[in-house]
Image (cartoon, rainbow, N blue to C red; front, top):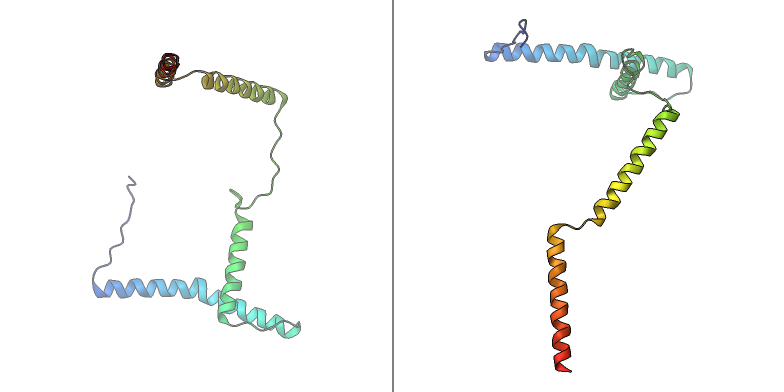
Length: 141
């Protein structure tokens, strides 16, 4: 357990209003404002180039696309999107893999040939029943 864990406690109507205010300010600062800036920048570029104008919602989508793209590209620790061909196996790894496959196929073949004890008993009963039927048929003839 972390020793420096801080717990935020919201108590009463005043605390609830404060939490709503903080969330709305964060939303306006990190989501709405950059969306409006993206909309204004697009519309400014659209006035020089033959592009359609966009509204605030489309500006928010444009901002989301830009923000996610920056997040994916700038993540230096690990890549969220990586294009890489798998490495080939060395000769020793390939030989050990083939040996393991041969051993597994041999054990599978042996296991399929071995009958379970319940199957042996049922097979014995079938043999006994068939012998009794042949004896009865001989008597009837």
